[in-house]
Length: 110
Image (cartoon, rainbow, N blue to C red):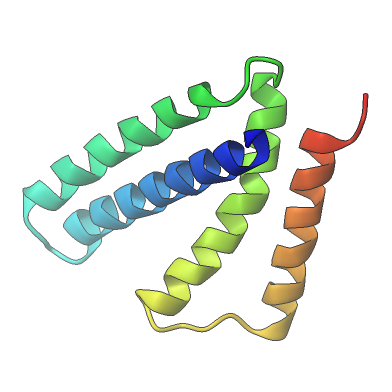
């Protein structure tokens, strides 16, 4: 259950960060309404909050280092699904390696 909860929190944090950044990008670079920026800012605050819900035994550094692996995968998925830019083979291999690294950071016995 702890692994499932951690994965869900990482995914939610990643989606909040990517969607928030994307909305701010749309506001500032694609001349969208200021409300894109406001909603993006709200999502980015949510992104800052979500990692604090990870298990207490994990330090800030470990949580954010492991989150980096999840962020890589989610960023590639966002690019594929939202911007219609599918990842190439090296990107997929790199994303898999990042996830393995994230798992080692969090779950390697200490």
